[in-house]
Image (cartoon, one colour):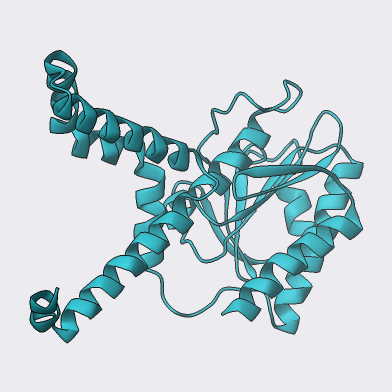
Length: 255
């Protein structure tokens, strides 16, 4: 023990601290996602592999060793959304995109008013608000707009006669970055059958990123909001405004 302490260097402590931070950030990324369950499954397989070797279970050990030979490729495939989210966070500029200024608060109000108007007219809509994770990959496949956020613009985009009304609108800061964007679809079976593609797309984008997605149902005119891969239904103007204000205000305060 004394010999170990004598050989301990100050940058060994730095090494341990860096690894601890990386593991902590990894756990934050996968927390509450399907990846957390997958990690638990991999842990069980690792434990089974150790027991198989210790108990001389040769067939089971051979099968598990064959699995671990391809484990790196399997992990990349399984955790693709989490890896992309982590890399996106690492490459982000330190400039915050939170809604804080008077102009940005005006944008939130315009989004809320547009959402309620769309709901009253039963016009289906999907509005995605970018936060810290860069949504450039999804913006690039849509129709670029770079226009000021306004109720009138959002209503015109989602009007049934618009050629881009079926896609998602992505809002970056105070600007409508693009419309007609295609988003990943969540494959969860937990959703009610009454919820359609827009709701699954809202869950899909919020599972892979920290974005906020607002959905207006074309069938019922109901408003839902998705965050962190979870959907909250039956929102009204007050609750929607409060939810958006809390998300972006809290994000700014924590920074």
